[in-house]
Image (cartoon, rainbow, N blue to C red; front, side):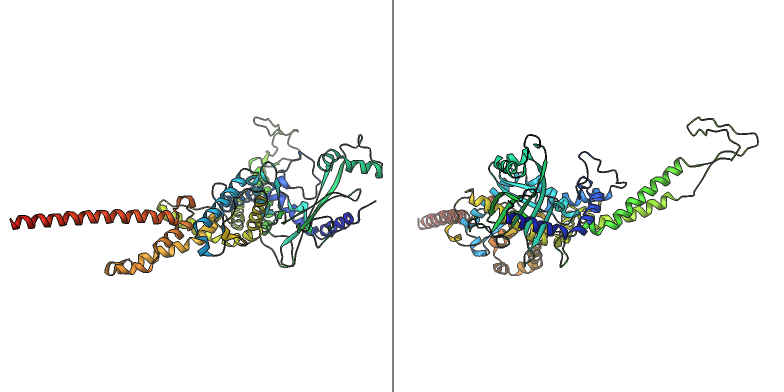
Length: 529
């Protein structure tokens, strides 16, 4: 007997699938020219089949990898911390115990990320993001590595948004052989199939069955058996038998679904590859025509008299062809093609494709006259031009990802007990990736400009500097430039150093005063004598 809840999940899956046909065709074209290794939107290709045989110009493939790698390095660089925690209260954040606890939590999350499969999977997310426009990634707890990540191509997933435009439903279908089903869900599932559907496990051990995995808010489907603490329900459904293989729940949504850009009314995102698809297809066609034209120039077709040549014609090096006396010679057919014009047109198209993938912002053209300071300044300016990219990715990728990881690690007991003053407070995430730092670094530059502007006035009135808080300026600048917290002394250590310095100066002054007084007494004694 089929489970009504399983049928409801399958119906929801099929409805979302039916409304996505236009996207499938679009994704098929994009993957064919930009990321051929994923060129299987319709699941029709055989394993080991050639993937790059449709590519005649690799510009699109190259700029796709370049942009994905640049985003990886600028947003989630494995060697630097790309986020921080804050309470939202600047005064509270300056407390040494709060600052140290936040820093410790960030360091542990960063270490956990680098010890998991995050770096390999996040790169796949960026590849999908710049080509398919939507890049789902699953984040799950793992007994060995604490966190496990798994990127899914969007054409294997079906998503839906809530009233706030946030993806909160995910359905994914895949096929598994009986062996994997037993290993994952237990032998009882197969025993039920044997009893109800005359299934022969020995003969059909390698037979594949379709499984639909749905993750959804509890309001969508009534999961009566789930504890109330689970905000999202999860169910694996075997389509052939209509039974639920496994059912569980999540406190937080286990997927992040970033989108490059999104049009109002659409659920799936659009990408730079989609924007440049017309130029990419045209360049590919132009390269094919140019290759054929070049072949005609190198090995041109021949003009042969109708009855003045003894067949067959030999076009190999050193080949001898015999003609009748007085017959016309064999001559090449010159088409007058302009290969230089073809190359010029293709280079123009390549430039437009590179612009669509932000290559100018990613690569810095250094001149021999540029100083190191100018190189740094130009690099920061180019990164700030990529700021709009960061906004949506902060909201749809980085923030939910860090929140999900923090939730898993906190429930797993991987953090020290938070200071009492943070009890009941919700933490906020502040991004410190290379792009984010370039956007915030202008604050520190404004301080430098202000100090340079008032420097002449300080020569006349040194008290002008009293309006600046030196300690706060130094801490803000260090924070802007990403100086690790462990390299900065806390306020207690700074106060202790200053007190010791003041005490040493007082002792030195007292000694000088005593020596001065002793000298005066000695002079008076000599004078009185």
